[in-house]
Image 1 (cartoon, rainbow, N blue to C red):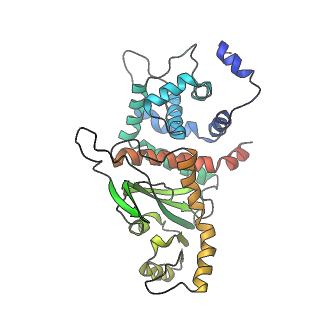
Image 2 (cartoon, rainbow, N blue to C red; image 1 turned 60 degrees about the vertical axis):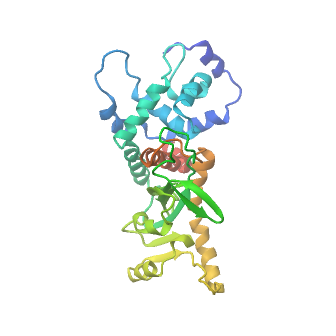
Image 3 (cartoon, one colour; image 1 turned 30 degrees about the vertical axis):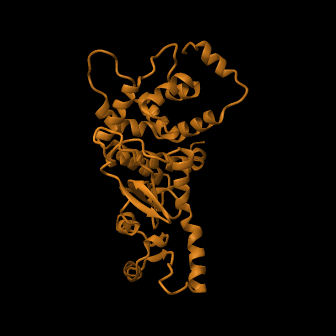
Length: 331
């Protein structure tokens, strides 16, 4: 049995658990740690000289803390020094172990990006949820969201991000990359396109593009081959796809859009309200990413790095949305 430090003893006698401790306790219980560590281990564990390598379990937990609390590499290091709840979640104790510095945290993130491991993590989490009958098949909800990218030119090249572009939504212009999600996504100024399972509301597909790419162009990338119903907002209207879907026996539940010089009929308005109640599930994912995890603006330069992060965020958002069912199952 490990000897507790004075700090740990003080925390153990607290009368109240903070919201952060409750959240981290819930996520610790539902993340499939062994499965994810097995994916990363072949790329991480190597014979080396000099300072001992930080345990993979510690680095993966720190990486997830960065996603949940929107922390930079230096911010993650400082938070670990500052907050006992984060150290406890990562399995660190100041009395026994060193806190990974910001360079170590950065190197681990780069390793995930270099080997496309965030995509593997997303797929592993999707398989994990599907095995437990939480991620279903049969229907998809499509949507996209804009994530702002810094428009500043104060950098070495004196230019904006080359992978980003401008787009107009309503009467406001946005700059950034677009992310496409097929109930499996989030997006931004660049754009995140996602495809979400119509029954569970969990993301099954994620795509990222620049902000100038229209939502409708990503339709075929977000729909699964075995989908029997497809939901979407007015940005996905296509008479051609609607006829093709009906010919294949697929229910095309994309909202009707008013045509120039015409108004929607009462039956079309009723249909839009009916399908809108189901389509709203896709907004829950975006709420978790933007409000719960604080991902409202891109942190890194380039589409590849931001696409890697969005896959991690989507995997964690799925676990967060399914956390109650997963905890009931484990009891």
